[in-house]
Length: 203
Ligand SMILES: N[C@@H](CCC(=O)N[C@@H](CS)C(=O)NCC(=O)O)C(=O)O
Image: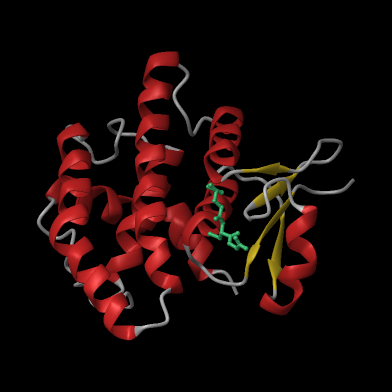
């Protein structure tokens, strides 16, 4: 029988990696399809919205949009709240992470180094602290967004923090979110989850 397939670029980052982690945490045996950059132009028009991640489930049309994929996996495997209101609260935070990506990602495409530096310094002094403060205000006793249990929203928050914590986004300090202890705690609790560790320990 064919397995679910998750299509994304060959990098442990962003929307694709959070979907891979969700499938792994859910215990789903899936095919991790890594798209090489030179293959992307031909594949792009075949995807629902011209972007990845895309999840293909046997007998179903391809599903795109990271949040839709995460919520589906989460609902099917106990990684998303059953209560409708609590689920919506998690989905709102997931949309907040997408807002972050939509705001920062245009700087990835800037070729003029001075323009990129100015844009990123501006983000580091205004947008990013405000973004994190709004997350922090919505986090409770933790360690996760919804309390004791890890849900798909936590994978998304983890990936958002990890993006900058690696220090690879020039002109944005690696410590940009260090002043937000609850957000940092979500990041660390996901990192330290045994299932997450086993994903990164695989051969
Ligand atoms: N809202 C979409 C955004 C998808 C998106 O922009 N994906 C990027 C990679 S993270 C992509 O496919 N970039 C290549 C392109 O747009 O051609 C989602 O959450 O999945």
